[in-house]
Length: 435
Image (cartoon, rainbow, N blue to C red):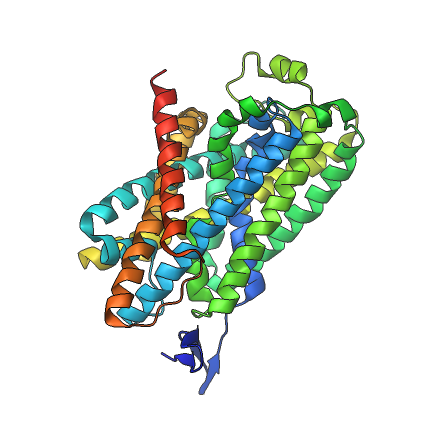
């Protein structure tokens, strides 16, 4: 392990180095900022962007834009806090890789780890159900269309195919290959997304852009929190970038800023072209409103339908990769804490088969649970837990005069605000459940 210090600032610039043997030669394999940025961006851009306009339409473009930026700032603070506590835990443990669950266990004890583990596990499986079912639907529709077998292939074929295809790639591929593949997927998402914006921008109506209802923002918070969540892969990024503080901060800021810009542009285009009356008509008889359906029937032709399918599939695939990585870290943490272990095949089976089976039995189960439990899980994992860990670590470092690098300014005031907002979201969600 290699540690580099700036003596004038007492700041660790890189915690360790990835060294690998290439024949008889030992080579340094530094992490890629581009790859880590793509991992964060790809994890963030998923099913959330597809559902976003349905919950922001009642409030309008300007109110939902303001709320999106506020949620992004909160998620950014959360991501930096998780990076900070991960770095400190790696220093204390003397290890080049520490997962989120191990950090919670070492910082907040077994009770904190159990609470975080329960929220983490539920959220990841719920989101994987959504990604697998939606990705499978898109994939099977494309296959059926190519083969001229529309409405013939059953839903479970798509769900199974998507899981085996992308899960198999992750199982067989090395981490560096997956990182490059994910970067390529993100590039496809961005290019197809720009095409969608160009085609959809011609349908924007100025009256819809100017429409505002600030009182209707409350119902959008849950989906926005889920859409902008990437904190599960922050420990992976810290490891990939060798504990380099500057690179980690850069990857988290840029990697989360790219999806924010995409969400803001997407939200404005869809809300500018879809009226509330059209939303009511589209929602009749459906549990979830698909805003892309409006673009599919907007008269833009076959090209729009192809772009929609490409964008949706690869956006879901990038998020799928990020959340599988998150569960891999989770179960590795459990193995370390229990002194047990799982080989590679059982580990991937444990991650992929439950959401694939659940998605096959009930493809809409995630959307039923999302509004009630998404905010609860993310408020705990992305708000309360990181703030409490940072508070305790900073306090311990002050007592021992140890090295501590706060990645978020504001001291305890910032941490109190983070916890207060999370508790407010949980309280609102509970009140909504019992109305």
